[in-house]
Length: 199
Image (cartoon, rainbow, N blue to C red):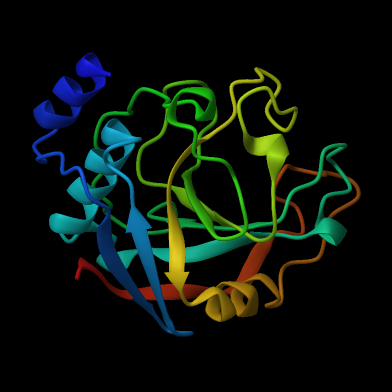
């Protein structure tokens, strides 16, 4: 834990013991989150680096994963995903160490805020919000082949109605010939971020 806190401080953000509240205003509505630096210091410090630097201003929610949009997946989940992946000239910082749920004790419950990733230790600016309980995203879960899960680091405290509204928005039509991992999951009209800041 000391090593993680040292890394968090090196990222340029002071680690606080109490939860940190942030507000995301989008074109569909506002969502308020609590971040837990005492449990996931590296992930929270990284996230705040994007927020405090104003880097999320060109971000959006661009992907929604529903039970009916995962023909290509045996293990199914329900989340909405956002970040800077669709933003032009986006600033991306170095990837961070994966803070596993068996260490942080933060589970992927309804409204959990977590970091998106591909390989281990690859999280940067992309994040997702769970819709309903998603144990397959925890350490030992089978959604990711490496079994390491994803780094939960906060939760929605206000605005789950907005999250669910986004999750039910129209997406592209799945292409049976390609079945890319996001086929049928890309929003036809991404939900743009208006502002993302601490409260």
